[in-house]
Amino acid sequence: MGSAAPRTTVVPDGGSPAGQAHADRAAAWLLDALGVELPGGLLALALTHRSYAYEHGGLPTNERLEFLGDSVLGLVVTDELYRSQPDLPEGRLAKLRASVVNMTSLAGVARRLGAGGLGPHLLLGRGEETTGGREKDSILADALEALIGALHLGLGLEVTSGLVHRLFDPLLADAATRGAGLDWKTSLQELGAARGLGAPVYAVADEGPPHAKVFTAAVSLAEVVRGRGTGRTKKAAEQEAAEAAWRALSTGRETADEAGA
Image (cartoon, rainbow, N blue to C red; front, side, top):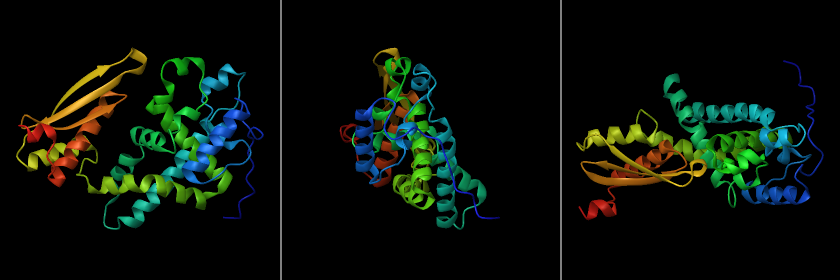
């Protein structure tokens, strides 16, 4: 292949469509979170959800950056898996990748990114703002991919690859310790069967208004609560509870419920 032509992209000039104060806050957050700065309005573009863009006269959205970031993230994670897991077949590698590159995992990374997470810096329309859009897994995951796309455009693949490794290598290490299912509920089910504890039983409750519900889950094995979790969805709460139970059983730690049983 011949040498690639210089990349050009049209982004808003420096600043943010929400004003300089937003641009400054977002830039300070990114510098604190990842130690980098982005040129040419790329950060503001990565944070611009389509709901905000449509309410403000058809501004550019972060969807093209999301498309790019999805591919960059997939490349870096796949490359790492290929190199670090030389004995695994293609099917197992694909499951490992899917256990890390998915909406729930991406949203979790976005929430942990820097002080307060990515959500407070998103530009959202009024509808998304009033329905808890800053905490929606889908919006956070898409924005994180858009941010990765912006990092690639602004800083290049080598720098972005290093940042992706910082954010996702711990998830890859966790995934490699799990069972064949590569999700916490399946892994807990396998562990429970191996320990003769039977199948996990989940109890889930929710509270809060319809647009901002918080779910709380408890998981029991052999009629003893082994782990608890919370999340913005029933599935996320159950996964967090399953992870807590799996870790407690794997390390031999008793929960307070178990100790009192």
